[in-house]
Image 1 (cartoon, each protein chain N blue to C red):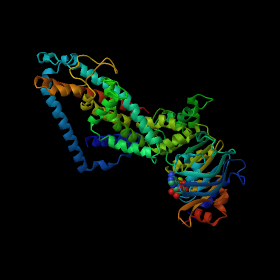
Image 2 (cartoon, chains in turn green, purple):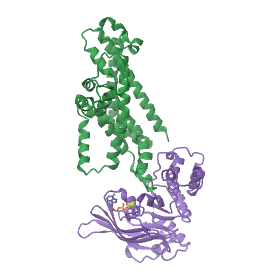
Image 3 (cartoon, rainbow over the protein chains, first blue to last red):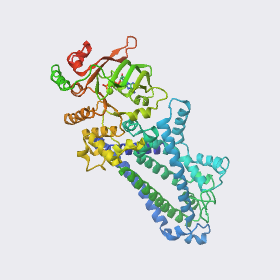
Image 4 (cartoon, rainbow over the protein chains, first blue to last red):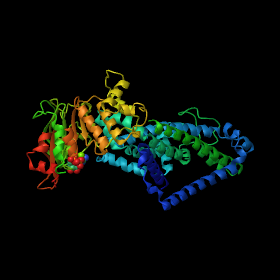
Length: 311
Length: 282
Ligand SMILES: Nc1ncnc2c1ncn2[C@@H]1O[C@H](COP(=O)(O)OP(=O)(O)OP(=O)(O)O)[C@@H](O)[C@H]1O
Ligand SMILES: [Mg+2]
């Protein structure tokens, strides 16, 4: 349910942004209905209030431990050393997993979207199966993808073991439908007249896609990707399945070697400890996680604006 | 309307046009076009003369755009469309399986009903065609862009803002930009589907002047609903109409009459043509 709604938001955002970029003048005044505006404002208000409450709670609960040691030191399981315990391995782990996720999910998702929008024959049985699967995949609980990752990436087919890239691949499976669906929506929002103009002057289909369709849909694609990554960065369950450890005393050696952990897993284990001192760390970890999320999204928004302004 | 066309005919009568196109650039022979099982256009035979403007007129839905799109294989983009018969370009059947539609469109350019510039700068709009088709230019790209914009009578209006968005132009300017963009790949035929229907009279006049000017170098085929426009700019006019099928009731388009514009507008040989141009249609 949650993911279905999530996808729908992503889809709408992608469409709106592409349309807005292509034609700023066509906005109608119907958004100005005062009742509708009130509903929207209330919704935004509730969302912001919830976020503020979480941040406020995490700040007060984790204040004691929001220090440089948190970033500098490795996690420690010993209660006696709690004052200096950090989460560097989890921060670096999250960063690596996200980078691995981006370089995998964006090319895969965008290629799939291009295929489905521009090339696929929607009357064939295999395209129809793909469509049905895509729609349903978005509603599959994340733990299922954890099991999939365990069976095919950790063991089975790829046998990578419990390494960073196994985590990236598992999260790729999780958010791929979101990226595909939003990218398709962004591609579809590019008006046919632009394709016709390009094809009409003797450009090939590939060049039309590369020079016209993709540049116009990048802002929408980036928006969808932001939403997908924002979801992935907070996932703990599937990564626990594929063996993201906790209290890892070293950073991952690379994408394919060394055990790793990520922030949500670390936070989860800290908050599950009986010793309440660990809970302070967990709260501080939440702030760090939100900070990373903010940085990631700011970068993506900067990227999007760059492309929106390009011409 | 009924007496409006009389003086207009004189405008194009100032040019002498041979009775039949002397060396046709494009010829449609027994052209039948289908959308799925719907027979959209029936048995069209038409020849488009070199350095002439040919207008295609007729009531809505009679298949003018369909015929036009078949002349440079843009109808290939409609999955359900099917073409029977031949369309020759300088004697080559463009529907021959060996012919690459991409190559056809490089020789036969197109301007659409609604101005559709790319979401890029004015300069990039014109430079796009030569870039993506890998054209070998005799001059630099900058000079080529200037040449195209001058041809399209737009240079003076945009020369100081080439890097600005094409959307910053007015509708009429956008349409002339689309014409500049179409000639940038150096086609020798330009197809125009109601190029002025989204423009005001002043912009329309500018585009019409441009068409007459471009006729010296290009062969132009234009679809229009504006009969004064057809009378003003075209050398030849093809009148289409739609006829309901006895069994299915679907309206199939067909060519009624094709002649010199002066003849069509002053002395048509078919009653249906006369009814249409005198506004007595339907
Ligand atoms: N892509 C398409 N798919 C199916 N049928 C189509 C398609 N395009 C046109 N038709 C049908 O073919 C017939 C001719 O259409 P066409 O657009 O060529 O008419 P037209 O003469 O250009 O009309 P108008 O003056 O309104 O532009 C119409 O009955 C139309 O419904
Ligand atoms: Mg039409």
